[in-house]
Image (spheres, helix red, strand yellow):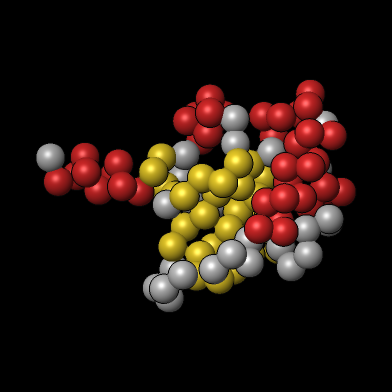
Length: 104
């Protein structure tokens, strides 16, 4: 899987999510390799969005997303936009679950 990252405000992530959804529908055999998650930043309504796609050719379709390595993609995220449930659970954890388990 190839990863890209872009910081976006408000609903500015919607075109990327729509494109990811279209690519997913056009490539159903690769459904496990299409993901979009986000993490909050210190600025209100601004998040870092991470997209996972099967190839660099797919990533090139996403304007403004910079290629990042697997190690640069956080394991703890704030929001899930698109992913297969099992693929998501094997890779990510929600920040609110982490905070809750630490306070218990």
